[in-house]
Length: 310
Ligand code: XMP
Image 1 (tube, rainbow, N blue to C red):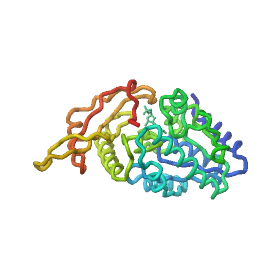
Image 2: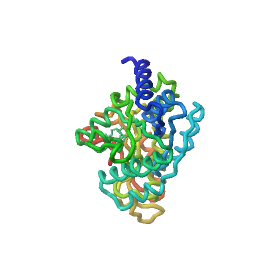
Image 3: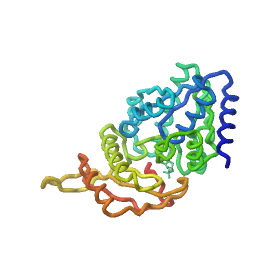
Image 4: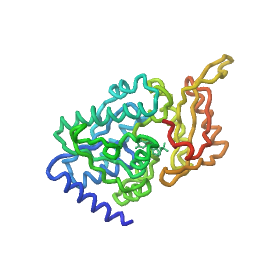
């Protein structure tokens, strides 16, 4: 595929679709939304307003990192603090699809709805890719960012139109476009991170305390496995507890799963054969997190498992 041409075509299409109106987009710092942000700014300049939605489900220090990286490229990113709204929407929910639904509704109806009203924007630029569409349509999982493909008309439901310039690409294609756009490797090669964020890595209820635990474990896994060359690695907090011993006392503690997979485009995945010493080190560090006394390595490929847990 000619990615230079893809960029030109998408820039022209965004310009054509938006006309002299304004648009907004949400940037998470992942490769998909980063590519959309740069394409959108090429097409619309200041008529695109870019927001980082702090939904409480992000990794450590993520808002600061994203604002700084894009600031260096001359793109202003405004941080919207929506932590309480998301935590409230997720309170008490344990069913995976209900959790995803709560994240979707809070993003699209509440937060974007409000931003659209505040800015007068008529369009939302979206980082949806082909794999997201296919898996949702096939009923495997409701990706948080799929709307029209499952019969939701964003114009009717939420009051704005959605443009999806990456809807024909898979992850490898998006990375190629990122390079053409001159995005730095820490973005173009960044591991995928799901839209529902750490909520996709907490089995059971999402609470602030459980988010702190999975965020700390995620930081350790990403640090330790940064050089693994894997497609994606993560930490997952289970809702089960297990008996352990700490300081000579019995402890009924939490269980963290480490998952690390190789894949081309996330449709299928195999488990990365990590060195045993590496796994032991990850385990030693994760079980130092307060309340966690077990760490497991997931050996399941996709299929039958999916990459995320929720
Ligand atoms: P699964 O868990 O379905 O994940 O095997 C496949 C790939 O998609 C990512 N993923 C998501 N990305 N919104 C996204 O933008 C979502 O709701 C979502 N759920 C999963 C996942 O991290 C993996 O790379």
